[in-house]
Length: 200
Image (cartoon, rainbow, N blue to C red):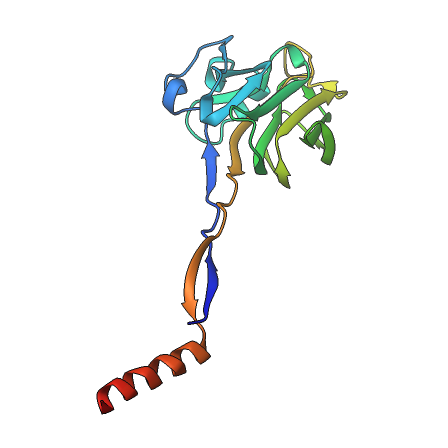
């Protein structure tokens, strides 16, 4: 009997990290806390979380898309995000807002095995969150750099911090599961065998 293998795969599911669930379910007042390792299955080097509303005269307050908390690069330094299991993922999108400087530049890079695979640089202000779509596919690390801009005169401080909310990613697509499938010739052969048995 001839048998073929029919691959059955499952679609990847997008996951949104709001920084308001799990270990971050409590609003964290200014200056917030560093994001615990393992939140959402990632490690968040130099990334912190704060209740945006606890810093009213800032871009943090304007950066809130869902819940109360927003993530930010502590001290305006470079940030690194990677899966706890060091597996691959797709970075879909996130909302970004400048904390203090209008015209802030944010460079985002996606790496795989230490090699740069995708990158994008864009500009944000302090007044509204901007949804940025990336579609960085098959990466295992993200790096964020923020620089430039001019202090918003309505705000008391200046700095290159950015706020981020609603981080959306896709987990890897599971390997296809082989499923046996009878070929047409095998089906015909099987019917002939059944017919002969009935004749006997």
